[in-house]
Length: 88
Image (cartoon, rainbow, N blue to C red; front, side):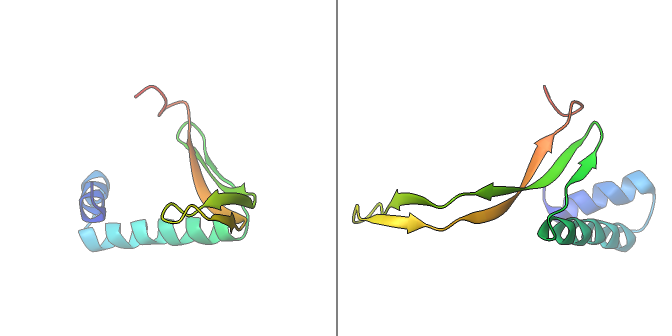
């Protein structure tokens, strides 16, 4: 499903114009992104949890040359599904 299709589904569910649904979806994405960047965890009971996953530094290999390289530590957004989504 594309973002446009998702916005259309939200508009139909809420019975609002597509531009209002698009603003709502964009606001959700923006707020979620900002909260995760500041290190917060977002929980929707039954649906799931958004949090930040930290990856430690590690060694890897360049697949073309086989040379060993150092991969830096990083942070990434992670979604864990809740009980309502498990077993779909």
